[in-house]
Length: 312
Length: 312
View 1 (cartoon, rainbow over the protein chains, first blue to last red):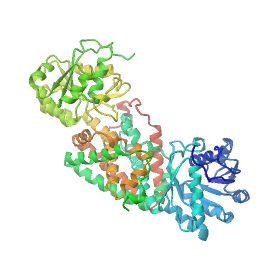
View 2: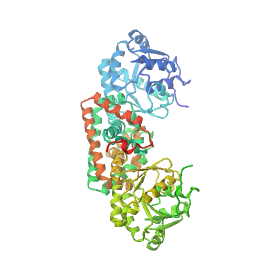
View 3: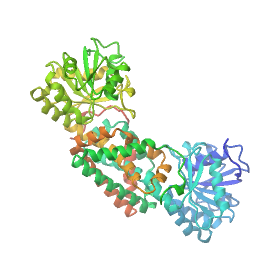
View 4: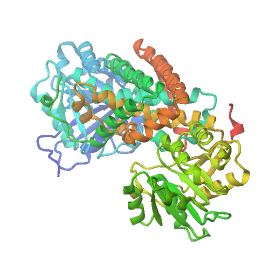
């Protein structure tokens, strides 16, 4: 049994009840070991997704973002507010929530970019920005929406918290214990470090994958090419089926780090282009062999290295 | 039961008994419906792999490429010779085989590039180049070597033949029926068309995948990055665990078409870079949405479109 010691809640508000928010709600509602009243309220831009979440039993109550009175009531006495919408909505959501935010409520988010979330908290919450604990669960599925939500989505997965000025140790521990109660392992790093790491291992590969499909689509023999694409293409482009809205927001929110990675990647491609052009088999084999060794040694979901084991 | 009508053989010679050559040998040896003496002789650069193939029962006899007398005897009366080594070895293998090649023997190959194979056949076989039928089975596994060979590796897969000047209809049909007997669907296209299609959907993605791992490896916080890489990275870089020797040869052999695709891809990246840099969310979302729609509509192993359905 996983350690859920120290976590209980009476009222959780989830803004954006899709795969990510819905899965956390299900995880916390369906574990008998977790104490408290365990009421979960879902807030949505449209009533469609929250109505569906209500029908599925993922939430106890659905509130439209436009319904001020209901929003105010939902937020009164909330232990935790989780923002689980595309990251461009973080600041508008915080601004919407701010007027009715209890001093004891902790807000967190599940976005793939963190420097922008920190800036959004400062802009929207001002002196109360410390009530916001930036977070990123490293989990997902190809399917999206609340129908795809799973109570065990976070079991064995990593969650990164990026403490910001004003976060109390108690607030950080409360959010960490929430994710641990859902089965995750919690790590901390700075928002800048987070954004650089995920630009490299997640955001850039998504852009590269979308770009390959875009390129083939633009070629005159696209249908022929797609018809002979096989397993390598399938895996390389699986992430090109990801949500355009989510990835649009990630690219814009993390553009500084992403552009650095994209430029470094383009430099590698330029080097490989030269080796291909000059038929430099030795250089190509050296790069491919290094990559293969590293890829074969890599373990998905492996325990992250300690931060002090790595150079900055 | 698959249609194996019209295919039987007495003596098959496989040069390079690894995953690809070994799987074809197993497929043809283990199907009772196939007639003939069904003797399979393996030829290898080293005796290690052929000895292992012999021990596994994949071949009946192992011959070292350096053993001229044994090579001559192996080729005498051979129905078919399959070249299944990295593509840079196609021409040296053909030169080695040429002196003892029977007029009735058909040679084919399983390389991922075809224009180079056509050139190799002309260079090595001269006026007998028509005895060589260029082929490419679109199948593979992450594991390599004869231990990974499977009798059903080609079942339901596509094989592309690229007819060249001098190939008789009978020779083409014989190789096509061999692959059909192994369970594959056979298609024809020109070697130039083949190389352009596979540069786009296979060779370029391999280069891009190797390049991402290379880039992360070169960064000062590589260990941290790898430790937080997750499912998207896993799928995007699965093909970066492919054989460095094979992909070195493919990149060199198909460098003209590959560079064209790489340059077109770099142009797409340049366009996306500009959109990221200017926070042009509408442009990013449009590209991502197009790619997602195309990727979701794509079916792996789907029936290739008719060639006359596509523009040239």
